[in-house]
Amino acid sequence: MKIDKFMLLLFLLCGCYSGYGQERKFADTLNLRVYFRYGISAVDLEFRDNAGRLETFENLIHQLRADTSAHVTRIDIRSGASPEGNSDAQKRLASYRGLQVAAELEHRIGLPSTIMHLESVGIDWEGLYDLVAASGMPFRDQALTILRDTPEWITRNGQVVDGRKRQLQMLAGGRVWNYMSERFFAQLRQARVKIIGYHLISPPSPPVRDTVVVSRRDTVVVVHRDTVVISHRDTVVLDRRKSSRPFYMSLKTNLLYDVALVPNIGAEFYLGRGWSLCGSWMYAWWSSDRRHRYWRTYGGELTLRKYFGHRASEKPLAGHHLGLYGQMVTYDFETGGTGYQSKLSYGGGIEYGYSLPVGRRLNLDFSVGVGYLGGEYKKYDPEDGHYVWKETRQRHWFGPTKAEISLVWLLGRGNSNEKKGGKR
Image 1 (cartoon, one colour):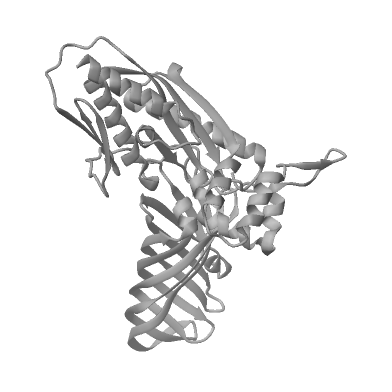
Image 2 (cartoon, one colour):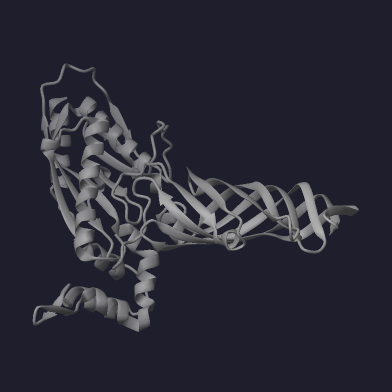
């Protein structure tokens, strides 16, 4: 049994000291990648299956401790950011990501911070080079030449006049930069955890085992008495524990209603996995008895939304969205001629929209909806200080029932857009 443990330890150390540039099958089993949303340093367990990878890593550590009596002595955490935005801001963001992952490992697994060695690479140009080199993207060779040979900054008389990022943005009229932004940048917003050292501790005498199986989502490590065998599977399903997630919400006002002198306010709550629930309320009670002019309305709306697309995958409450909405409203409109009054109208439909960032914590949300609007309403005429009823009708309208250009204020930790000068 001691020989078995020694062989396993030797194999672990050989694989773990292989370095970041070379992949080893077993070393990769002991690696962990935690991905981050655009501009965010907090560990979001719901994003890109971070919870599953962390739990698999935790189970692997516990299993190795139990079956090999091994004790982790060193963990390297290498964190980075994508090349959008200000370079100094990206360096800080990358550093914060490493600290957040270290805190998560200390909290979840009990690994002491003293064995964690943090390295922040800022903008991960090396990682971008590897992704471009392995791709078949247009203008690949030109992009690789820029990444390899162009300094990050080129200065003249103390002023920055050119650099790697600017040349990439100018290549092929910006098409190369957009291509990389859509396909590669999200993979650079990560922290990579690598186990570097083990040592054996004095274990109790365990029963003899022929086989130990350590599983993760895409790799199964089978430790036999005399050898180590690594095989791959498509999926190994693990039960996951419930985990807390960041809280995101927004407050908004529909500028179209504001222009029409109908004050309104709405709130949207992020539910996770691209889903949100939003509600809004409007109220106006303007009148002039002398001129018989009325502008009276109040009511509300409830909407269930699903965000999708590249921007939505990087940040909550942003990008394209589809939704189902329901409406209820009371109104009384009369501007000197025939008036229209409804004590209750109701409807619902399907909406499409896009939420566009315009400030650090501000979005503009453009939405249109089509559906049904129904309810009873009355027509009347103002005459000699009185209101003369003319007729009562039922409304059955199919078509556009919603238009929205809303100014959105983002709330919640990390729920912000890029600062002036670029993404964070």
